[in-house]
Image 1 (cartoon, rainbow, N blue to C red):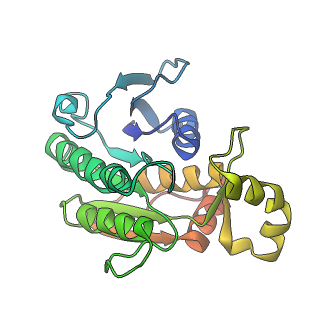
Image 2 (cartoon, rainbow, N blue to C red):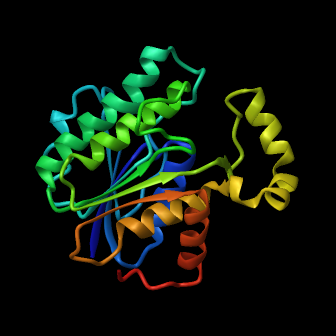
Length: 231
């Protein structure tokens, strides 16, 4: 039975990932780590509140003996200053990965990146550069398996207040968008399912993989159809 850690389960994708993980018969326990309470309980679930991801040292014991982490902590561009965006996107990811690697060195790591992430650091978009920096850092940590997910527009399957006008427009035109440009959209539950399934793969091989939006959709379809998680 697998033991999973989910970071950011109060968010759109993290919440879907938590529900998906709790439904998996191969998952025996899930530890949710976040800054806000989930608001529900489950027999498989342990909730750990951690207000400051700038220092994750206190999480070392909670992270011990885990099989995988699904990291969905993040913030929307424009919601915070550029400095805060980099701190949350890069520094928090690196700090959590440092402590998790020390506590569960053989674990897998699924990371929620974003479409256009630029590991070369050349992009004019801060979001793309910072997600690229976080990807580079994770690939250098030494985890035996790192899975990086770069979704395009992610459609929230659960009702929510959209973070800005652009997202309100995108939600409104999603039915047309998914028909005309299907590889530029992904449902939040499909994205979460792909992240969980990757983390649960049974393989002894060391591997890293980047999932672009098209790959995520294919992985989610395979998982929904009961595809084998053996590598």
